[in-house]
Image 1: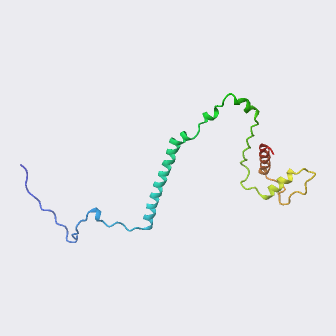
Image 2: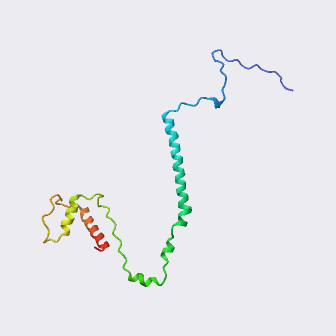
Image 3: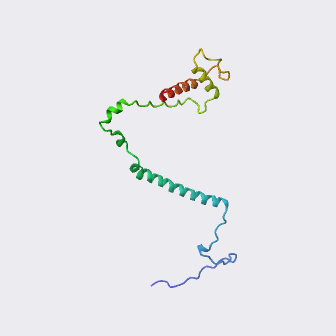
Length: 154
């Protein structure tokens, strides 16, 4: 039927030492280095962030529409209150802050604004630390502050 001859295994060269193979589970783990600990910490941090982000998304989609009032409910008003609402004076909305105005207003701008707000007959000398040529943002800031005062009713 077939050839029943068995061949002998090839011998290893004499320079290769016979070392028994160990199972994978008995391999020594690599040393715990700082960069390995940092990587482990980063993975834990990423997993925590993913969990928190997932909880936020779940809240936003599932619970927020149930808890938060809808706009339709606020828009519906009974017919009786229409007359009372027309008589009430709604407070005007304050104007938005101009984008050109810096976040921190210099001290000279406050002093110059106070000087400009005083009637000409009662004014003293112009503030010395204010620049002669006032930047454009000052005038927009001053106009915005006057709009805030008008909206507040003062």
